Length: 357
Image (tube, rainbow, N blue to C red; front, side, top):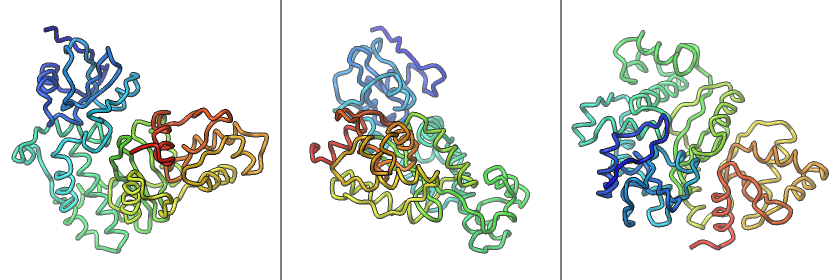
C-alpha cells in the first residue's frame, strides 16, 4: 500500500506515519489534531470517521478544518468534522480544570500524568485558539489577575493568586499581554474572549463590558483582520476569560442551533460609522426566517441607490448570526457573498426556514 499523503506547507502536524496509523485505526484521540481530505471525493473528515478508508495515497492531511476548507474540501456528512463531536474527548475536562484553578501551572509532566501527549495538546490548542497550551493557561491566569485589579485587589495578593513567585515576573508577563504594568490598568477595559462549538464549526466570541463585540467563525475569510479591528476600535487587550455576557451568548447560540430561539437578547457593542450602524441595525430588523436583498436593505437605510455600499457595510459586520448578515441575498434570490462561506449561509437560512431536522 502506498503511503504518500500530501501535506500542506507549513502545517503543524504529527509525523506522517503517526497520522496514517491513526487514520487507518479510526483513532478518536486524534480528532481535532488533524483532518483528512480525500482527493477523489473532495470531502474531509476527522480521523475517527467510520466511513470506509481509502488508500492513504489518496489522502491529504490538514492541521485544521480551516485549511481543509480553504483547499476546497467539503465537510463529511457522516462524521461532521466541524461539529462539537470533532473535538478530542480530553479537551473539555482539561478546560474545566483550567477554569477551576487558572493559577495552577500545568507542566508537560502533568499532562503526561493525565494520559495526554504534550505535543498533541500543543498542536490542538494552536489549531483551535492560536495559542500553545501553556500560552493559553498563562493568558487565563493574567486575565484573572486583570479582573482582580479592576475590583481593587492589592497587587501583592493578585501576584500570589496568579501563581507568580515574584513581583518582577508577574509585572513582566502582565505588561507583555496588556501593554502596561499592572499598577496602571485599574479602571481599564479588556475584551474577554471564548470559543464555542457549533454545527458549523468553532466560533470565537468576545465581549466588552457593554456587549458582545465579536462573534466569528474561526476559519472565516479575513478573521484575523476582524480581530485586529476590534483591538484597534476598543484600544484594549483581548484575552481568554469568562464573562457573563459570553455565558448568555453561549446558551442562546445553543438554543438557536437547536431551533428553539429566534431572537437574541444579548446586547451588542459594535462601534462603526453612522452609516455602518444604520446598516447593522437594519440587519437586526430582518425577521427570523426571512431574507432581504441588498437593494431592500439600501432602501431601508435611506440610500436606495447604494446597494454596493450597503453590501460593504454588511461584510464588515463583526457579530455574525446575532447581527444576521446571512439574511441578505442577491436581488435574484441567489445567496451572494458571506465571509463564513456560502455553505454556512445556506445552512443558517435552511435552519431558520425550517428546512433542517
